[in-house]
Length: 385
Ligand code: AMP
Image (cartoon, rainbow, N blue to C red):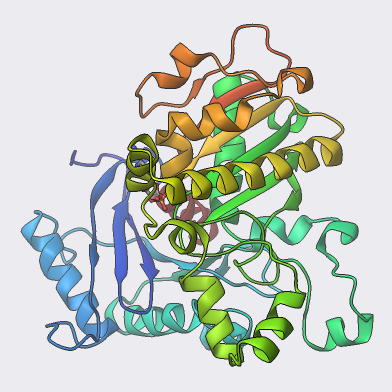
């Protein structure tokens, strides 16, 4: 942890229902003064009763890491908020009205927004500095109407704010710019297909820095196969399960969000373990890997069509940055579309942004690390000045 010369840090908070991730970031240099996660909030037997106690625990841990928040005055706190609904298309300074709106948006993101609200309330009590909400949906508020509109009756959609919102926007936006920097090419000139493959997975098509398609929808359940989420299924599955398996709506929601995806197919959701099982000849793991890759190819093909061809295909997040077998499998058989991966470059281990396609490839294939905390810190600092 280097000492700063470039001003006051931004505290970035990502509050989940039972965890609080934190990072103290100097937005200009990107230096991280400290960071960590407080877990098991509110669980039985845990010392951390609620999010307010989690912030106290965080303050203690920061002190143990040599950072006393009384001596290192904060510039602002940046909060990751999953759902910004129809109105939040950019970061916003949080006041009581904004907090109320984020609370109301819990109907659209019942698994995510309530925790963010509790985290924001606790942090506003603890830190008397500007608080900024950075929304996971904001980057995709630019989706053209044909991409954001579901083919359901328009009055119903308007009444209930039903549209494709997209998520992981902070990451896709950061990676789009970082890829342009890597290639030494203006962002405005690039057609990019970006694959964010972490615990949650999403794809985007970005044209000239503007998002024109993404795989997630009204909720973060749509699209790619994920660790525990099914991604795309026939919408008829819900009614079928209700009728044939006697399941309630909540049970179906839990099934598709928490028990499906790679976990549901193979019994494990950590991708490292999945790949180990594939190598050991486990057939369930093999099928999970193949379904994961098949869905990815489906979206890559779709986005090449949406963009009228791509200049670059980008892999990011835990799986995208670290799993050479996934990258190789996605590119396999796509040479006619201009997508080729150089196996030696692909196998190289590195935490740096890098190109893994051969020189002169029609489509550049790149691995570009995401950094959502830094993106949130920068957007927060830009807003509060
Ligand atoms: P993230 O949400 O970006 O932290 O990504 C988490 C996912 O990345 C988990 O499924 C991890 O198993 C996966 N992951 C992390 N490191 C590796 C690796 N070396 N190889 C394959 N998957 C990895």
